[in-house]
Amino acid sequence: MKSIPFTIALTASMAILAGPVSAEPANWGCTGGSVDRDQLSARSPNRAMERVLKEYQLRWDAAHVRQQCEAFAKGQTHEISCLRGRRDWDAIEAMVPDELWGMPRKKVRPYYLALQEEDDGYKAALDYCREVGAIPKGWVR
Image 1 (cartoon, rainbow, N blue to C red):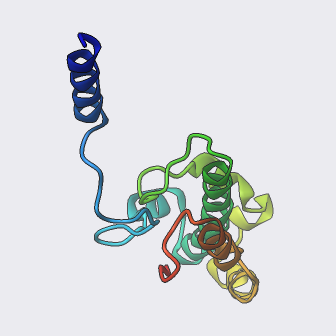
Image 2: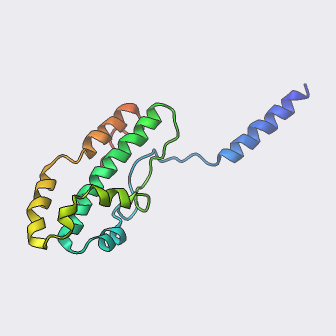
Image 3: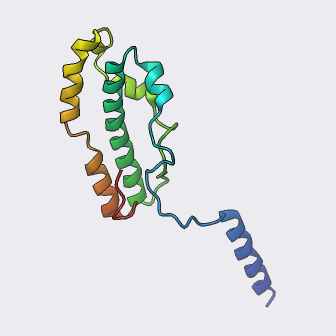
């Protein structure tokens, strides 16, 4: 009989330590947008390179989103939330081919336009996340 009050106290303290459960389902949305403007402008010598860097950021986001949803599916530690301020900008910058950094803006433009036409992988990553139940079925970027 003495174990019942202990069990009740233990259950209550675990609930307090766990904190409130969010009513909102997990997703990748950000209040006020997800763009890291400070990083894009600080790392880009001109607007054309800023656009190229943004395209590589989308590819990094897609890979990160997929990794987090895979961890969710395996029951491992994961974080599904706004990426603004949490991206690995050194890794994103390293994805950009070296020769682009020294090119004039007008020569970078065709490369940027080609990147825009390519599949950045983000839709497939979100589809996977929905499939495993990591994000709501109706959530879109």
